[in-house]
Length: 211
Image (tube, rainbow, N blue to C red; front, top):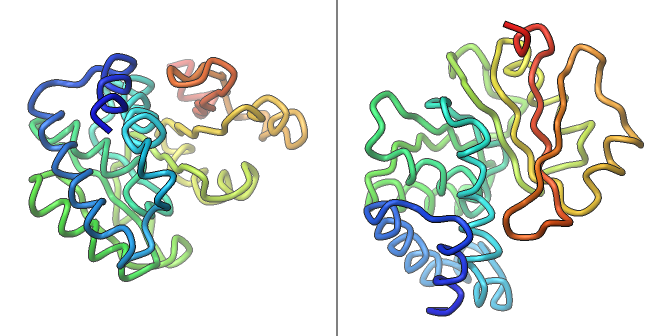
């Protein structure tokens, strides 16, 4: 795992303070992973590259964003990683929405011990009042749902000016071709730093993007 950590941080560097907090997060993940069904043994062996760095790279795609919403946070990828990176940023807040209570307990413990500005919402996405989280600068999700369903959840924030940042793997272009989003959305694909054949879909309101 030491080698995996080194590779991850070479691809997606973070500040020393953030690295220390991320290391604590990974340690907690190692202790909680079987209790809360967070991550498989095989996946945990490469947790720094496959999950931490893959999540950390998203912050650069919405560099001005301070208030994030992470849909279906699971073990905290990408929401908790983003929150840890924003720990010392004034006004930062990452809303982690997760319906599994065990995973929420884990996320709450990570936020408590790292000081990350994460707020855990133990509920289904459909039950959230979007206005209660406003203002929102960016919305993200990782491996939550097919792209059309994901946009159903996220459009309420994107329409108000938030940036959507969604890792979609190697099939990103095919997903967009099969299910073209509404014409009022501005979309670009950004290559992943972890896999040049994988892409991150960045979505904004077309009218907001022109402003």
